[in-house]
Image (cartoon, rainbow, N blue to C red; front, side, top):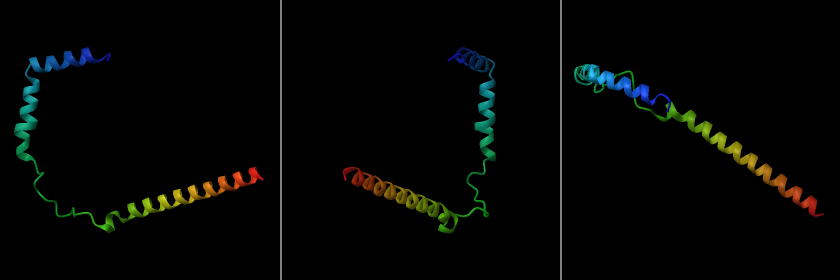
Length: 86
């Protein structure tokens, strides 16, 4: 990669000057105290069929249309073969 040397030099610079250590302390050690990942938001509920039912409807209709096209194409092909053999 043409940028490999530049990235390596930049990362080495950040590491030598302690910037990576400071960022790690700020984001992983100090920042973890403010994490709200374990708190449950009452406005967000679990997904039900009412929420995702439309996805299944679209998938079903898409499969049905695809099957219909495949059937029509197969019949068309069989008819063409029958006409060619006559």
